[in-house]
Image 1 (cartoon, each protein chain N blue to C red):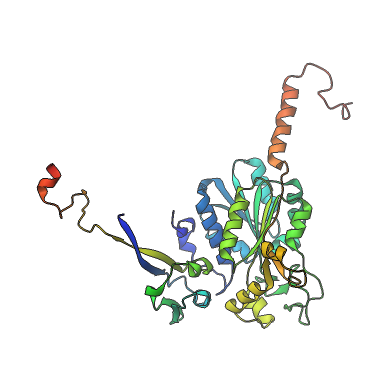
Image 2: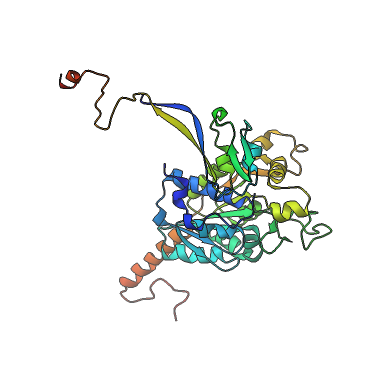
Length: 286
Length: 91
């Protein structure tokens, strides 16, 4: 087993993340999952957008792409279609993925393109000083919600599941071993895989909501979540208001790049063997 | 059996540590302390090697490794065992 730090650009560490920020924990879990699977560094492309969480790729020694706000999955789709043999991993935040990049997220899930997306959900826009995001829970405070958030939060896992992702899971930066396990399964899944990692933002979310620092936030996350297997055995009143963690959805569907290549080669064959006629596109021919 | 676990030791990267206290709070044996704003293993001998500090550290500042001790200390690089008389190698 290689050292975890071998996967990092060591000259760029320590990271710029605040003390106690959970994004580093998620990055570490991802690295350990990659290390466990024995994936080749040179066959992995990391794509990220803008935000605290998207800083992660700057510290990782893979082929990385730091793109515009919300467009990480759009760029990743391009990479995957150009080079389908590469492993494409998107590291994105809740604002990046659910707000400005929400459209790309649902359409990548609809296509079931072979991309592993890790959404680091810290419930707030941390980089721009704590505005409420689409995943800020109802009633919680933020810089732009001084009297409590009026809106209701997105359930990103339900969204991904409904849009057609074939692997959907959720873990937290408290449940690190579970997170590592789920990321490992997501990397092995052929299709669009989403792992939502709930993380803590002590600087804005914890401070604005008077929860406390990183440790108190991690305990708050722990108390607010319940494993999906444990929840199945509990009566509904006991799991009310709790967020489910664990593997939430898994299904089988044809993968987009494979279907696309199959279609391309079929059309090329029809064209190369052309002996007159309308080449099988009756409806379109003039 | 050439290797045997003799407890654990901690690699602390003080340059990376930001002193957030996550490892200290979630250590089941409470063996880590904060010293000058950086983590310090005060009682490393009671470590059970659960790696929770290492996994939860957001800044990759702490690592737990098992202390491995060679039981056959007399073996050198050539694999010659000097505890045996020299004739034994030519037998």
